Image 1 (cartoon, rainbow, N blue to C red):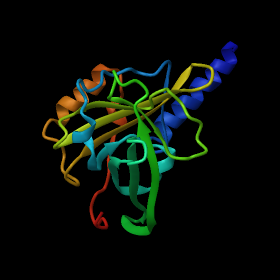
Image 2 (spheres, rainbow, N blue to C red):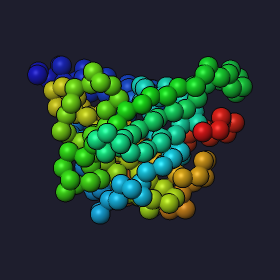
Image 3 (cartoon, helix red, strand yellow):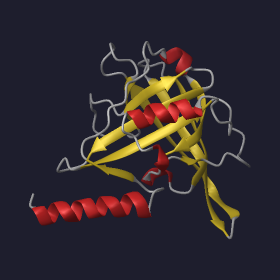
Length: 205
């Protein structure tokens, strides 16, 4: 790839990163690799988590009240995944609800020696992969969890990042939020791109 093409690609990165922060977080270079939760216990992790903050992404545009529900699939003991929320837009600050949104998937552990590194898929047509795409960075299981994912884009010049700070209690910030963000920053993850997810006037889950 020549110099001009590189400049164009990096310009696209800048536009997407700064002009549309709730659509995508795209950064130059390779994916950051934060450490993950030691001795991850999937059983304690199961249950309902609410989004407190997240990176913008294309599949959650205008989604508020985001939550994730994890269980166990009896057939193969994989983790069942339900991601749900409410799609709304605002006119002069007034919310207009479009409707509920949800997607069902499952999570597997490609390497049992690395239980905090999971592969999550949401379609039977999605290609199977042994490459983890859901990293539990840290959690205390009872109050908060931090999840990170990243894809290197073609050409290896840019990466597309996803991040969520989850809580067991809807709309309540983790007591250690500053420490969480400091840890992410130390792993070269831009926490300024996180935004608070509205969890008010949500339907009961």
